[in-house]
Amino acid sequence: MFTYARPHTDDPPLDQPLTVEQMKERRDEDNCITGTIILDKGVLGYDLEEKLDAIAEALTGSCLLMDINYDIVGIGEDGTLAVEVSGDVSGIEQSDQWNEGDED
Image (tube, rainbow, N blue to C red; front, side, top):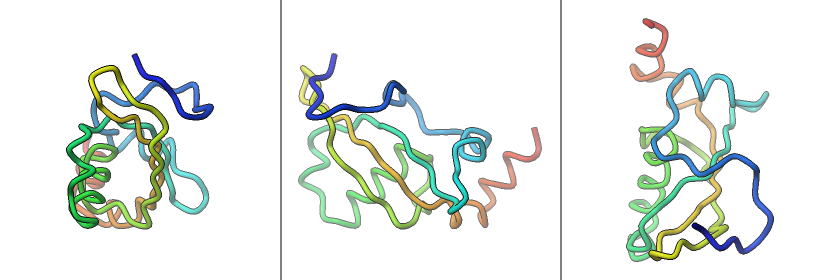
């Protein structure tokens, strides 16, 4: 259960990274996706690059997400953080991860 600091989307926080198919469905005309992830509060102690990599990997399973914006929108009873994230999937789109999604 989370206490939210502000209104949030009706989509529940992700319990695993988005698949390539989900990224393709969610991306907008600017190739950006948005989702809410759960992070351990320890991430707050990371340096900026480590923090952005952790956020990107939680949303997409890849550190190739670009132009990342994030906002902590809630705190769980156990101290975990609900974080709303948006970013550009162009870097992922050019990777093997994206092409592996086409093989299904």
